[in-house]
Amino acid sequence: MKTDSRQSKFCPPLRDEFTKYGDKFVKIAHNEANGMYCYRRTTSEGLTYYEVFKAPKARDRDGNLYAYYPTSSQFGFGTALCIRGDDKRTADKIAFYISNAFDAGRYRAS
Image 1 (cartoon, helix red, strand yellow):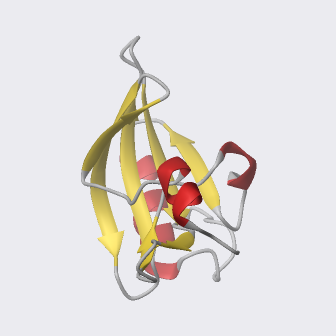
Image 2 (cartoon, helix red, strand yellow):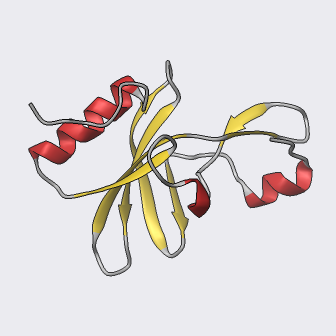
């Protein structure tokens, strides 16, 4: 992906906490080895989702590579998933994708 300094304004680097679309995002896991992230997303209505994604990369104006939050069109299996729920199965799915990225296929409960 070709980037320039104008694009970095539209794709800010990931932070531990940020607000986007009126929702609050808090990083709960990051696997540096495979580039996977998990953020807890809380809507203004109080709903909670977990977003697991392989962060896209861009370059800043100095040529440094950084990770940013995926665009809406990048959501889908293989890049980013939205996981609903707050139970053991949800935690197991998150752990599976953080550990294996999307290379191991879809999560299947044992």
